[in-house]
Amino acid sequence: MDMREKLINEIVNYFKSNQWKTTLEFLQNPEIAHFHVYIDTSIHPYKSLQKIIEGYLKIRGWPIVQPIDPQVPNPSKGICALHNIRSHGKPHWDLNWRFNPNVVLSPMTPIDAERNRNVLAWGVFETRTFIEQFPWSNGTKEEIAEIKDYFNSKHWKQGLNLVLEPSKRKDIVPTRFENLHVHINIETRVHPVVIQKLSLEALAKEGWEVDHAVLCIFYPMGHDSGKIVFLCTKPQVVFDIAFVFNPDVIIRPSTVPVCGYPHEIYGHQYDVWTRTMEEEVMKKANFLELTDEEINTILNKLRYIEEYDPYCWKIIQKKNVIT
Image 1: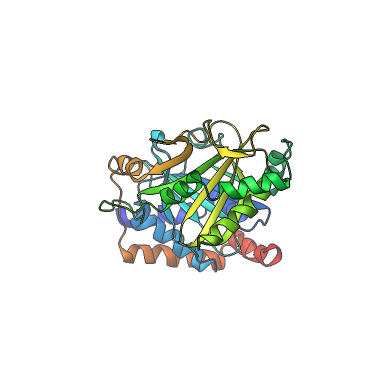
Image 2: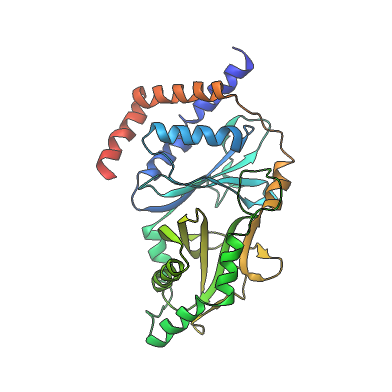
């Protein structure tokens, strides 16, 4: 067996792993809002691995419905991501990767990932439990009026401009915008469901179209935090409102850290992950690139596994029951 054939087989074997089986289960669980998967790899994430993921999901009958974005959730650890992988009717998820020249494609060591796990999800129960710990207001007439004013404010408009800030440099990674991902951070005492409703109305007035807005939690600085994820189709972008409960405030830009990636000018009002962060990680890596023929060989092997592997057949049957 030559080295390239061994490379192909190691990639195929990953899709038989327990981590990938858990990924399939999460994708078919309607109670899950969002999940993360952590891997080590020496395969180029955009030129090769992304094509395999997209092809695999298409084989399953779950083609992606929006371009996958690059992201750099933890640049200090060299962890980047295929961000917002989304198929119709499935939870959106992130494949967080770290360059490792000693492996082809394998689960990341849990201690190096998130909460000592290399695959983890946030669902309806976790989100409800987080939200219910705070004494939210359901929104008085005066509070609703102030929130509507906020969605005409400089902070909100400036946040949308950061989301759409055009790229001024030659791409190293495939992205249309200067900022890979943006969180617009707020403090509020008004229930996030109210914020979600009014934000969607505000976006519609701006001419934006949102396919889905997901209320969920995440784990940015060693504790759970809340956010609303906007999966937009016009323009085709993903951004978040991250919210911090403050009983003394109807709504205002955050004055406290949320994710730990504050904007260089506006501070904790926004968390911004930039192309520069991603480029610094990418230029330290020496990825292997697969040919189109090799990618097609991998996908053909995965198609065979989907048809004949007993575990995968069980998952295929399961999807007809719960999705």
